[in-house]
Amino acid sequence: MTEPPVVLVPGMLCDADLWAGVELPGPVVHAEITAPTIGGMAEQILAAVDGPFVLAGLSLGAIAGFEAARRAPGRLAGFCAISTNAGAPRPEQLAAWTELDRLTADGGFDDAVARILPTMFADPDPALRQRFRDMAGRVGPGTFRAQLAAQATRRDASAAIAGLSCPVLVLCGERDALCPPAFHHAIAAHAAEATLRVLPEAGHLLTLEEPAAAATVLRDWLPSTR
Image (cartoon, rainbow, N blue to C red):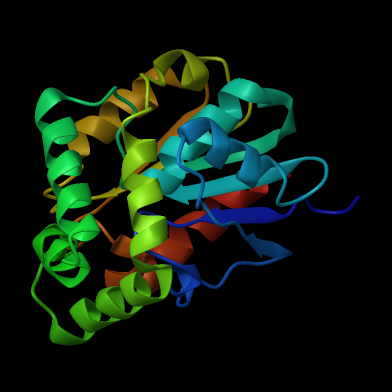
């Protein structure tokens, strides 16, 4: 029997380099999330491959993944939610995204990226910060504004998570300032078949900070999906 592919979905302002150090067995497909709504992003994920697949999404990638799970739960052989939040947007988040969109529209894309950067990593490693800036530059201001617009269309994903019959892996960094471990405990609590793993030294972009540890967790979990 052919193994279902793993579809990797990046976070906001990230691309395939987010997963460069995460070596996984079997087929791997990189999805893009460029639509201006979470529903549109979910359709991009579902169109990335035919048939069943394992979805692994980080941050906004997992949020779009929750919507894909809501729309097509039978397509998912497994779901890995990394560094994310299953809740609906809070008023302060909506205000922050509106401000980042205004700044970017006025030509301040680099300044917007600089505002986000401090929340991405547990420690201010210059090389990792540069990799994030490089990814953001490749994503560009147009897609960033679409991603900000999509964030505002989020809704609580608890029911979608509870509706999954496939194995669910919830992975986070203990030092994630943007999506702390409490968010991930809540996600795991909603899933029927959940595994929760916390990387003690990692922040938000844990696949960049701790790629070997992230890969080990994923490789250990993937057999449960096959």
